[in-house]
Amino acid sequence: MTAPVRAAGPTVTAAPHDTLDDLVTAALAGRLGPDPATERVSVGFVTRQGARHPGRARGYRNHVLSLRVGAAVGSCAVEPDELPDDVAYDCVGATVAELLAHPSLPVRVAALDAYLMGVRPHAGAATDVVTVPAGTSLAKSAARAAAVVDLLPAEPGRTVLVVGVVNSLLDELRRRGLRYLPCDLAGGRTEWDEPCLPDAAALLDRCDAILASGMTLGNGTFAPLLRHARATGVPLVAFAQSGSAVLPWFLGAGLIAVSAEPYPFFWLDGGATPIYRYRADREGR
Image (cartoon, rainbow, N blue to C red; front, side, top):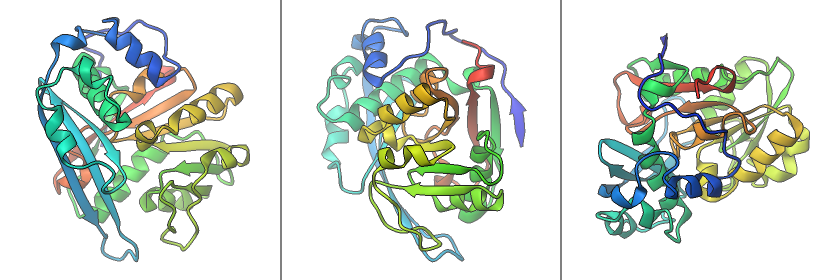
């Protein structure tokens, strides 16, 4: 179910940001909201999840760092066992400003995500909200995939570079007659035994559109995708659990749409869960 969302809360009038570092600099300078030196992390936690949907031959794992600032929770997924759980504990009590200078990029992303979630909550900023109906893990995954792929301006026969492989997204692309190039830093193979290629940069010239996971923020691979989209006009859409409140700030700078899923994610709850969608051509900045 899709419903429009009317803008409320803080109004953002700044131009789109070109890089994550630029956005961090703006936050630290107090240009986006409250002084990050006055905002503290009250809760830090790690979610470890494994899943294999009934009827699917392959499973997957998720490992997500989440930080709470006030009422907002920001998240960044990492590769399994990339970060020790102690990192989450060490963040508790730290200011957002301190964590935006943390040596770990996923920590910086999670802290920025929590901060921006408070500055501009999805409910008042997104173009629309889609409710993923209650159901099995596979049913919810398929419904989420349909909501994400709806954001792609790609006709049947076109090729989509998928950065961060999710089999339900690939299945939805196949259903719509779209070709895809599966890309994932972790490698592996798709449900249809296709190799997941690790180097997105090597595939950019072969695609008509890009569908990228928010994990690209935390592993440092988002910037070249954004630069390519901005330089070539190739549509770039993000599906984000990691940095769901961060990525909308790049709309109009190469990013055309975002499917934003704040914590708790659809795979954590069998009930109905929201997805907040943003489109650059309908953003009320």
